[in-house]
Amino acid sequence: MTEISLQETSLKNDRFERLQDAVSMVNQIIMGKETQVKLAFSSLLARGHLLIEDLPGVGKTTLAHALAAVIGVRYQRIQFTSDLLPADVLGVSIYRQDQKKFEFHPGPIFAELVLADEINRATPKSQSALLEAMAEGQVTIEGETYTLPKPFFVIATQNPLDLVGTFPLPDSQLDRFLLSISLDFPEPEVERELLTAQDRVLMLQDTEPVISPADVLKLNEDCQQIHVSDALLDYVQALLAETRSSRWFETGLSPRAGIAMLHCCKAYAFLEGRDYAIPEDVKAIFPSLTRHRMTVPHGMETSVMEQITGLLNQVAIP
Image (cartoon, rainbow, N blue to C red):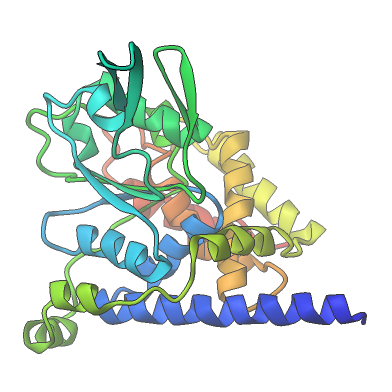
């Protein structure tokens, strides 16, 4: 092995160790949610975006803030409401009389980590402004194209129960989110510790970055080098085919969802400390990858998650 290769390996190992430190720090803030934290990091490392569907007060905003704190990126929270305009998200051009020209003032979207709080409360026009930025990594305002910073990670939240005055995201826009998770209520012993531990706000204020935005970009590249065997590809294709042929789902997963599955599977394997992906990685991310992309036929008594679990148990690992 050459000296350059040894140096690259050392740098890669150092990045991985600091990534593990970042995951551990977020777990100290978001207690008892190790699975969800790992899925959130998987979404970040796979260059995706995250949707959190849950009730108020379970830690959605805290998770976003904690991720921003350990990565050391600019963090912006956008409270989506019915009167929110696209310009409130993207920014606006203001005419400068003294310079006889328009000057662009960037909106909150120009941050590395953006929290779109209660995204389903904004009108479809405002939702589209954000989702276009997520898909393209850039925004176009009055004919001018502006590139968003890298990394660019959006965490959107919505309350699945309070639907009055909301505008549900269409399937085409839901598909822009790599994963969808739910934090749920904490276990009794974890909640007891939360009640007696240091205030989360103070913990966030004291949190120092352990990885940088540049590290995240390098980690994105590291994840793409994870090996995927032909047998694993067969398993992924079998899952895709089953979603399309099953009568328990209205529509199956698209090819884009299949590509997303592979990218996320690689990121999850990387977080597990392996340079190759295995079927267990697919099983770990599959429910979160599919819960917002698939629906059961009207009148079906079982939930989407129950059907997804049944599908995973039904498809054999090659």
